[in-house]
Image (cartoon, rainbow, N blue to C red):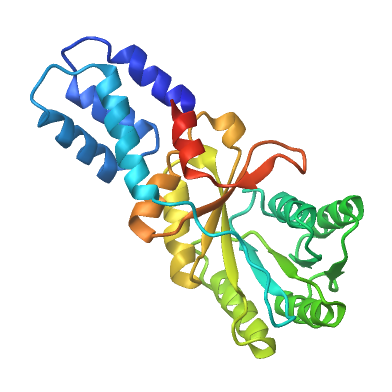
Length: 282
């Protein structure tokens, strides 16, 4: 994303701005048509010759107003039951790795964490999570290959309750956002968890790949319809040069970004900070 704003400053250094080019540049930075058109319209009303810094300053102001305050941190329950985190998204977005990194972050804060491998259709996904669990020295629950993902989450919740776990993180199978049967599977997982704890799952985090641009907005729309999202995990912010797509997702759906992935290591993961994100755009 920082590269995007640098290019704005470089391309719009002359007083006379090509409005069509500016509009295309903002949309190309994944800010979305709605926000991009609003920024251009506001710039046109400023009534003086504009430079690239004016574009950056107004973009920054608009982004800050949409993102608002930092989202609240994940909280440990006070009744002894685990906080259940359901992690969802399309194939290849980085769900399993994000589950592991989130588990590492929570463990580093002193919490007891358990992982549930509810992607029963891909042996590689279970193996990958198992490797992470061993590396991080965390308990993990898995089921039979091709088994019922909801049953894995159910069993994991029972074990988490018995073990006094603070956070249970459920890694689900990657699914296309336009496949009705797979979305129904997510609803079933929620229903089954609700039988154990009427308030579960307490967090439903959608993992989106920053490099997919506007397609991430469509994914968020469909997943939010199927199961109410409480936040985003945005991966690959280290290499995309963008990340602006989290702004229109927040504006249209009200879904905040909760965590960002910045690399391959377990420590390359952090809670989303609005001020830091906007400052780093520049």
